[in-house]
Length: 304
Image (cartoon, rainbow, N blue to C red; front, side, top):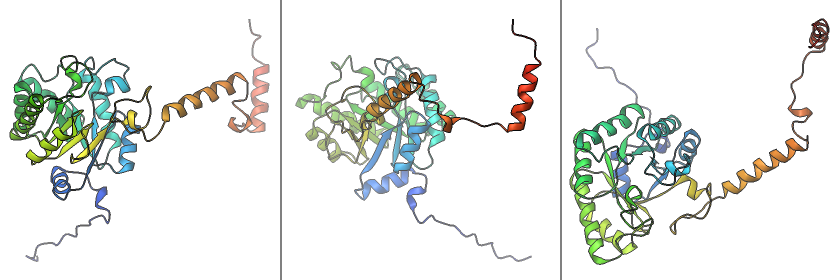
């Protein structure tokens, strides 16, 4: 028997974008100054759209509470509901890095609760990372505990929808110097406990620039100006699958709600006008089988 080791051939795809995104690859893109693209997804079709577009990260956001489950805010959505959405998204993804939101009430009570929730997303939904809101003492402690348990964590500062009521509603944050300094310090604290990235939502561009300057991890902006390492938008906002225009920062790239409404109206009109279904939508039966069927039906007892 030969003592020489067997040489294995490693095939690398010509298009590296088809490879699964990893934290090292994300950091490489960040260091090269390549903008990171992130979008939310809540089901298999939206995940497939994100996959086809070649985005870098996909967020199963608790915004799904409003966009697909019909709640008035993100607060009521349960862990099991968000877990169902996350599993569907995972089945639709191959390449993007999957991040899952920890819903309100699933991590605040204790470090143990936070770690157990994060582990469920990792084990049951196949999440690559989780995201939690806030940069106060509690949020930083929970982020640290989850990181120490071996699960990557993305932070989220600025407008944090789960606690929007305490922040005065859905409005821009850190608009005075004191609040801005607190936010910068909070973002630094999240980095210090091991967060691999931080979302900056609805803050002045100058504040975002200060955070970007002081952090050595990627920042993902949503209403935070152009200086962040990447951007994230809600799937339904950017495609116009909702009523209204959304936040000031939303750029709508399609108006699918209008197209869906028009399509369903056209279908309803055709059904009522007996225009649908037409002959082209019918299934045929062999003439011999038709004769046999009609003969058998004629021999059935009369209908009472």
